[in-house]
Image (cartoon, rainbow, N blue to C red):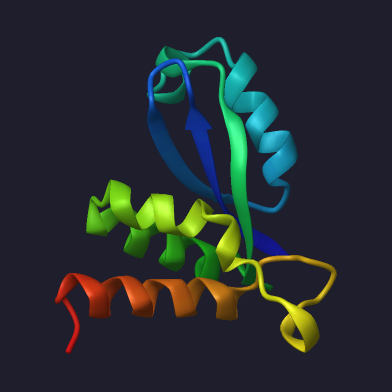
Length: 116
C-alpha cells in the first residue's frame, strides 16, 4: 500500500506533501537526513495527515503531483483538518482513505470557484 502524506513545520509554519510506502519512516528521514533539501531547512517536521493512495507507486505520485500543482496552502490546511476523518459506517479504523481525499479536493474546488 502506498500513502500520500502531509507534514508540517511549526517553527517555519510550512507544509510539505509527499508519497511513500511508509510515511512514518519517511518522516524520520525528513527530520534526520544529512542532505541539503527543502525539508532539511525547516526541521522539525510532524506528520499531520496520511491518506491511503492505492496499491501502486504511480497512484500515490499522481495524487502528490496534483496536490502540489495546486500551490495552495488552503488546500493543505483542509486536508489536515480533523473533520476529514469519516464518521460512523464510512469510517474504517479512523483511517483516511483515497475516497476521503477526493471528497476534500472536490469541496475545495467548488468552494474556491475553480470547479463548477
